[in-house]
Image: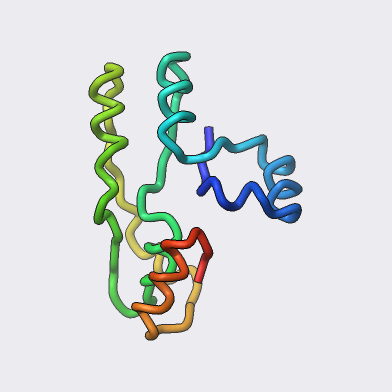
Length: 113
């Protein structure tokens, strides 16, 4: 099951995308709790918009600040966690560098920057 930021579900383009890839669920506490009670397999990329914002093709960066709640829910519901890291994924695309405070502020509003 794929999960995305809840704010994206307000976009008609994202809804079309969702139908194409098989109805992903929002990445929020209520959804995760429901899926875990149903014993569904869940995949999560905890970096979100922020990690996409700070991605650089010159250096590996991850964003996990304040992203620990999913670990607690998984352990409470008897899930095994399998941490993974995709090396050289940052080489797949380039993005604009800089203006970090402003761009991360936009991310905090649920907007990709």
